[in-house]
Image 1 (cartoon, one colour):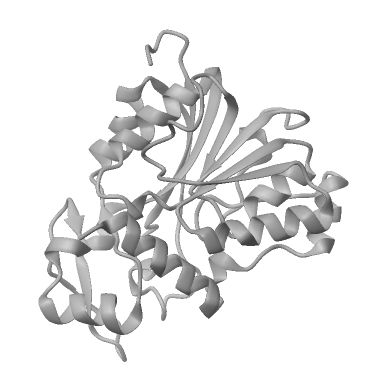
Image 2 (cartoon, rainbow, N blue to C red):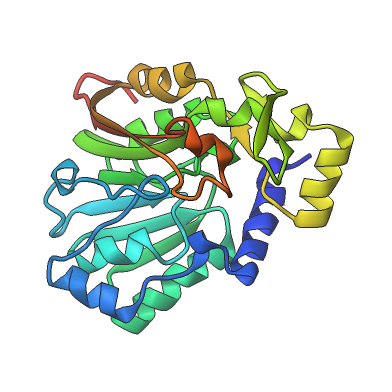
Length: 264
C-alpha cells in the first residue's frame, strides 16, 4: 500500500478527532514565548533543555514532520524564522492558523520527511524533529536529508521511539499484560495479523507505524555525518494508556551537530 498517502489521510482524521498532537498552542503561550518563556517537547512529556538550542533570534529552523500548531509557532514567537514540513495538510493548517492569528514568521510545506528536495543544501541552522519517524518505513533517508539541508555546525534535535515499544501486544486491556509478539525492525504494514490490520486501518483509521532498530536511529545519524552530543529518555506519564511505560522509558531524544566534513 502507499504508506505516505494512507498516513496523510490518517493524520488529517486525527486533527478532526482532536488528537493531543494536533491541538495548537494558545495565544497566551505565544505571548510568553515572545517574552522568552517557552518550552517544547521532542518526546511525550519531557521538555527539551534550553541549552540544546542555538540562539533562536533570526535562526533558520525546520520543524520536520512537526505540524499541529505546537512547536513551530512557539519557536517562531521566540524569534526564529520557521518552516514547518509535514505530510498532513490539516496539521499544517493548524500551524498556518496560529501564524496568521499571531503575525508569526512561519512557512508551511507539505512533504515527505525522507525527501527534502524542496530545500537547497545548507539552508537551516536547526532542525527540530519530534517523534514522527515511526511513520516512515525507512528512517535512514531522513537523517541523510537532514544532513544535506543543515549548515555545517547546524543542530539536529530529534525524538524517536525505542524499538522495544513494538515488541509487545497488550494481551488484556484490564490488566495491561504485555506479550512479546513481534521482532525488530517492525512494520504495521506487514507484521500485523489481518484482524489487527483491519482494526487499525479500516475501523480506527490509525496511522501505520514502523519500529526502527537503534542501529538505524542512532547509527543512522552517525552515518549521515552527525556527532551526537546530548541524549535523554522519556516515557508516557499514564501507565494505564501505555503499560510499557511502567517498566522503562520508551522514547529517546538526541542532540546532534552536523560535522563540517560530511559530504552531501
